[in-house]
Image (cartoon, rainbow over all chains, first blue to last red; front, side, top):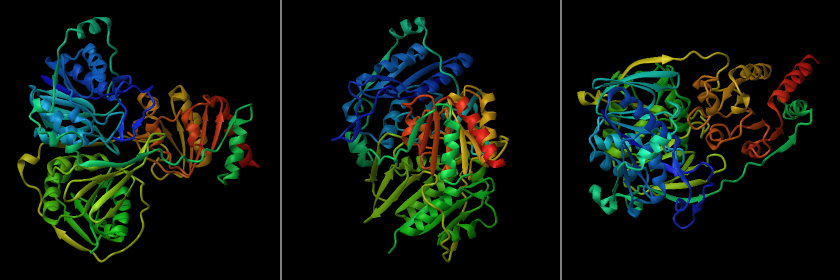
Length: 259
Length: 322
């Protein structure tokens, strides 16, 4: 079974996100990057399925050269190879332009199953997986919390408002996994050494047959008009507990007439 | 002429979802509101939609929309959009709503704006506000594509109001193409939840990583009982297996807006803040004085939850007895 995982490499969680005022985009160049934890879960799920059924796991990501560290991390976890779409022309892509690029890259690989994170940790729109599925012409199943493959049949437990749904489809398909579907493994030394020799294919949008007006800012349907810090919620009073903390909360509850 | 605004109405637990009615109320305030209702629905659904401002309802009760995910609904809605060209179509940021908007945004090559908290229409263009998550940035966005603008709206962004309109119902044919029956809904499993539910709770006591274990949630339950509230949790507590997913508040869980939110051992990650920061009053207890949650709190105590909460419980019992 050949599995393609779409995942992002994002500014590390320790980085304070800055916005570049002229482009209104997140500052990414020169910032420490890491494999998005949501993407790590998608890679992990791919690895578990291929450990059971055989096959390959290919990570596809789009981003500047700073993201290589995250790609190597996925390879060190055990992914077979990776595809990196590295092209200034794709900068400023909205969800739709991103989905077009990723779908075009996926089409260049043999695949039975595409696994995405339901949403990335740095922009969480949650609609890219469904868009990719449409461009690939495969059924989309999102919010998966468990995946079982039997022949060309795939069964997913899908998060629902009331509990979960059991949903069935056929391969090839695209599954977006919920955060918490698994605990991603940490790369071991052997994996880290092996990752250095694994192939990372690098493509530009043109390599994928995409015209300049389909990707990046030119291809984006969504345009950001303004961006800024929200008005701060008026922070209230903060006290340090010196043995009276619980009583002070009770006093506050009385003050706001809850008790 | 007023702009026509469509709302994709959803049914869950045999009733129209609150977000459907919230969106409809907003749509009727800024334009001519119309709803699309696909699949089985309660008997009074059409009436309820009309009561919240729908002047027209596109309706098909076929079970294909319930038994097969996304694709049949996308086929039907895409056809309706191409024929009727509404100015805007609103979807809830729910499992079904996001999937449907996602498919349509690609199929119609029009894109979509997600996580919308508010929007205005000006000369056929839309300007949407995407509220910030926690301490991050908020932005306004527009869609530059021609035709219908698709917006995915956050729950509880608008207040549902009664605004009854005379309504017409347009019965539409079901999507019948066999190729649309690709993702089969085999079974819906309800996970049993105990105690008061988060949805609609006026008071929520929530626990995070600082609670250290499943057993310590009993303390929150006791506090919730005293205040007539429900217990919630952060993703960290859910991922650790201490409490079920149904209790998760935040970006990948529930969005809540109670009158009182007490955050216990919660640092205030942006994903959690996004699900609760519009609560009327927020009280937090955390041992780390630098925890971001304090910036969003009306009252905060820097201290040990295992000391402060028992004292609060005792104090509430005492004052109740008095």
